[in-house]
Length: 291
Image 1 (spheres, rainbow, N blue to C red):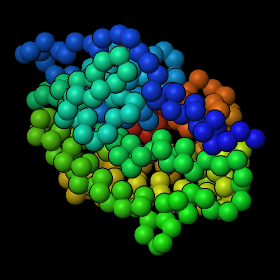
Image 2 (spheres, rainbow, N blue to C red):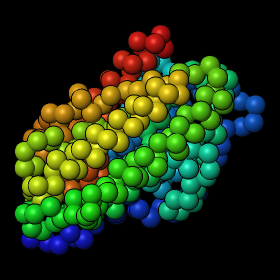
Image 3 (cartoon, rainbow, N blue to C red):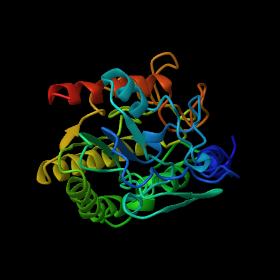
Image 4 (cartoon, helix red, strand yellow):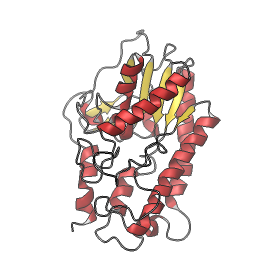
């Protein structure tokens, strides 16, 4: 059995692939803002899902991510600013990516924007490093919980708490720049089962760590829901409908690929099926609010 570094090399490679092209130019000054602006990290961008837009290549953005599917379904003009590796800071500042930069994700917002999706926070708490640090070639014990909660103070919950005001600031900034828009804060779909032993080595986490890692994702989504409610945004729950489609389920039903993907997607990220289902959930939330 390979060590955890080898098991997780795909995650880091997928999120840090070298790209050698310049980023796309921003919209011309004075141009009408798109009706729908998508803000987010790799769970919004869809790394590995065909076809990659290459605009800019380092964002690993798919033309079949949920933003593109929602825009097509609802007939909305779209600016998809989502980018692999993005944190909450990259909503208002340019993001350095392999081969160039991605402009601030709020750059396309304007008074004619009517819908904004925001999916952020996972990278603020260290998503890729958690996957790498918690993967194990030995499925017994609790190496992940021991790493992040060695003395009763859970470092990951502390990170989630610290991320909350950053997400709140982003939501408020977006609402100020796009005052006519409804802001939808999109939660993260279920990655691991809520109970049981998981599926080591497909997802190479110790049996006793599965509930801890799942609980961390639940806490992250709960924070996003609280922030949305406190800042005039709509929370979109993708975790609950995806609970039977996590990375430990069968290849023909899962929305999230495991550490070694069998479908075109980055490791431990949504596949095309996942994006289609998240798109249906997001589109339903938008329709419910008259968009």
